[in-house]
Image 1 (spheres, rainbow, N blue to C red):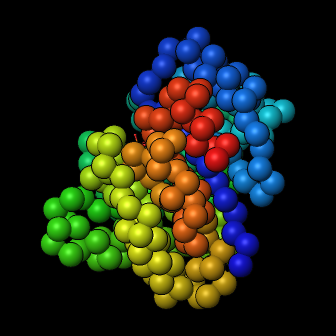
Image 2 (cartoon, rainbow, N blue to C red; image 1 turned 90 degrees about the vertical axis):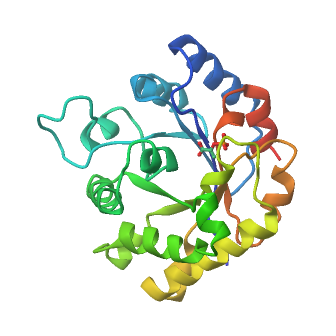
Image 3 (cartoon, rainbow, N blue to C red; image 1 turned 90 degrees about the horizontal axis):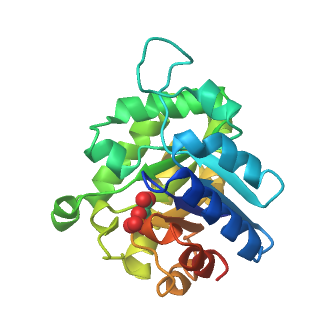
Length: 250
Ligand code: PEP
């Protein structure tokens, strides 16, 4: 089955405004678009509108790194789905490990954000993944089960098709320890099996599952060769024009 392939860069809380513009201009100039691939950048929210307009006539789409689930209100410091849309973004990262583990975001909040994104026509990219101690205790599949069932609770089948999943083992994020292509493939197969139980064969076969965790130019080729790896979510290596282009032009 032909699935969507998505190559995405998460800029986290890095870059000044002029550095962000320089980065996106470099990416737009150097991208060698491959048919059937989608490209996304997730800039810091203060630059989202400008980066979205710089990408408007390019193959890059933009997404926000986080949002609150309410439309508006007295929620100081938060941004809403309405604002994300208004800034020209079409995707939203939900449940990134830094949100879960630094800011203690729960599966319930992740679920509310997924539903809010769908209501507003923003594509959720749902991040899931286990801690090192969970992997060592053999709990990887049960963690994925809990995170996925939590995130999709109450989500209709027709809406489930709008969500992509990024498998990001927490021990591999920003650590330089990449999962081997075989380890990632095994986790992606488990995710597809969970999706099959929840929504059936067609959704399980169609959901794009990206790998994230220390993806670099020297390990991308082995990862994208795997049958169940439908692209990558890149943090550190998406912050420089050359290294991100070396990954997405592979
Ligand atoms: C990420 O931020 O989602 C990520 C995978 O980071 P890194 O590539 O730096 O490990």
